[in-house]
Image 1 (cartoon, rainbow, N blue to C red):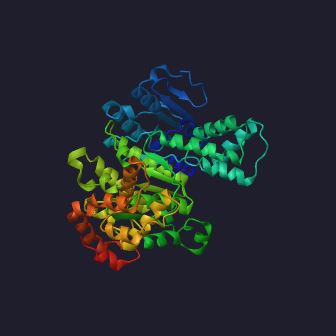
Image 2: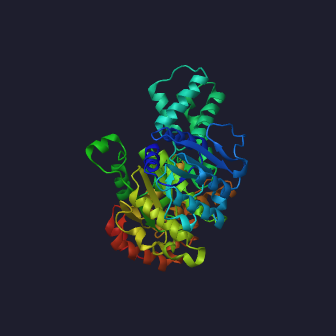
Image 3: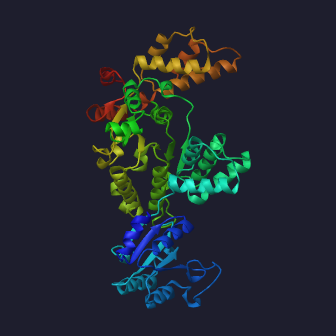
Length: 503
């Protein structure tokens, strides 16, 4: 980030938009760049103090007549010396014609000078008049080297004993994705709670990190106790995932393997698509982040939705390697390419930004998305290159239903020899995995209410009283199967079985 900012400033770019929550860290970076030849003075503007030279106390008002942004820009134009002029949170004045005109006048006057205006804000909002003049930079979150400085400073201040390289690496990885200030707070909390910083405190750091990332409600850490072997059936998909369990390792890089981009899981509701995504994180040993697309959309402020998405994706990249899980993506992007009339084009911009990120990302973020209604997804989303593979999870066949029964019975009873799994498998033909589980739970409630142990007959009765989704939504399920037969890879090991089944 520092190198890119330095190049733009030395190339005499007049207007730079720096998107960041970290004002202090960004200012330090700008001040460091200003020391390069030709040296430049750094001034900052806020709507509370006007223009103040960098390094002066924040409560000092140096230029009393520069509190308004128009006056501040006019003052900058009059300066003869080279300088970097940082405007903090100018975005509320986005719709002000006077401010926009002043900025355009400043850009015109900067030609041949070493003056640059830097707009610093956590929200990217650019007037249309300035779109051709401004360069937008996302100020990246701290990397391992910067976090190492934070950790070293905390250990020094706490006069803590030295820690091993392995423990240091674990503590640093635990704070990836946080701002510098957040990392400082997390390390301090871990030290206050435990009295020191060691490997045992990594869990405290991770717990606090989850809370910090969860605050905006867009990204959420997920943890799954189940392993992928607890998912019944889908052997073809399991094999594909197990083959790539070390795909993000250095050994894979040395072998020449590219980093996998992601996978889309289509299928009938209740067939374990979400569970597969969650258990994959445990199989691969990677953190799992769920992106709530519903919370990305924010109509309270123009540009806020796009900023929400950018911040979420930037956080995922900083934590990488990681898995980014998007459940029911068909609902999030349904009609995304043609929504200009309904929401002012917000959905189209979000959809376009996400597609671009998926296509161009170089960070090891593996996208796992699930969908039930494939016809709702825009065609651009499904083309080759977006995902490494598109899997179709059908209703379980006879062997898979038997395995699903075995898994759920073993969860609830140690001895399942009294159950005839073959008979249960036949009774629940056309049922999804979720429907099989709910049938078993219903049988248990029935027996529990009567004060006895549940039996084979209880399960059969519960299943026969249930009308499966394959019957109630037969047309939709048939259409999904017809689409997937030629366009997706079957998740089940028995392709013939999945193509043969009709209800």
